[in-house]
Amino acid sequence: MKPVAEVEGLRVELAGTTLVDGVSLTARAGRITALVGPSGSGKTTTGRALLGEFPAGARVYGRVDTPGPGSVGYVPQHPAAVLNPARHAGALLQDIAARQGGTRREIRDRVEHALRRAQLPDAEMVLRRYPHQLSGGQQQRVVIAQALLLGAKVIVADEPTTGQDPDTKQGIVKALAEVAHQGIALVLLSHDRDAMRELADEAVLLRDGRVVDRGPVDEVLPAPARLVLPNPRAAVGPAVAARIAVRELTARHRTAQGTVPVLHGVTLSVAPGECLAVTGRSGSGKTTLGRCLAGLHSAYDGAALLDGDPLPRSLRSRTRRELASVQYVFQDPRAAFDEHRPVLDQVARTAVRLRGADRDTARRTAARTLGELGLAEELTLRPPGALSGGELQRAALARALLAEPEVLVCDEITSGLDAATRDAILTRLAVLRERNALSLVFITHDGAAAEALADRIAVLDTGRLVTCR
Image 1 (cartoon, rainbow, N blue to C red):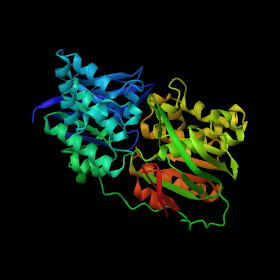
Image 2: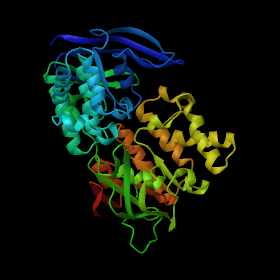
Image 3: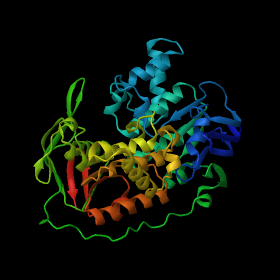
Image 4: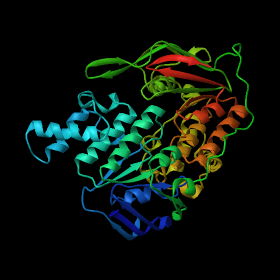
């Protein structure tokens, strides 16, 4: 197969640290190359090099050859970040298609053709919706259609299947396979072994910024070990008073057309030291439930209770004690950090603001907590943009833990992590439950993690509680 894009001897240095060192990669027409490796190994730096994008202030050596401007498309892990929330998906796609000229009918035909190529055949439904009204999988495929309309010869897909339910994941896998079948080169950055086995023609393993192996996925990546957490707990009995609960929770999303119901009369509770996993398909209401608990979504009827007392619906109305008691860790940690301040300072700020700690004590506590999660202090002195997604996810967890919460709401926090880092974080959470009687609301599509960590698993479907066992 003819090379479409090549990276040869890539070395990227930032603030005295080498992010990648001597990386070489070839993207071929109709082929899928998977970049794999632990968090911080250099996958994203290498993938974004194909777009000509490097961290601010970086020194770059080596060669990156692509077909030219606009020839490389990018599908991020969190596609909503690159979709305009104030515009229908159709308006964005039609603007791109109009650059080629033609009548309104021809422009519309090009958009519908791109959506079909991206495995979104119901164009009418997609075109009239805002990004937040689309599921994560639909958003991913709209971004793929956008890249196709721009004429991409290479598409870099960054963790496209993480945080997705099995049906949505399969739809994304099908869309990426179809794109490759059309002769486009794909570079897949992923920790999803199953998706890589189904899609990738070759896997390139990075570690500490260097290529250490390449070949078939099954040869490059060892089979994952079974996840076993320390001190498994028996289910908490019904006589134990709830630490956090929702009663008849009916939540809504506001749209230009009015309000859309998202949750319907959900009642759940979590006792001290208990972990409740919340699962269900994309769009089933899992994240909205967690955001209601944390005061991030106030458009609901019913009640959220902490130790039996109603919690104010809005974060802004909660006391410092209530803010500290219920902490939320976002699925997309990058959106929750200030890009211009060192990560260590932002983590430490939680202890200052919510626990009244002095600055020096807070920094020491932050450095220790970050270290326990595998982040060296030298790394955390950098701004968020210099950390990988997995490293920043651990920093987001550390920031929440500095509040010394009674309740921790974790929204898909392991979805973008390699297996070793995921297991280390789950082990840490299991220890905190035992040591601090921490109540966990663990929102996830990771069935193995839910079974290993949770006492009970609640399943949501179209906003309704289907079962809780």
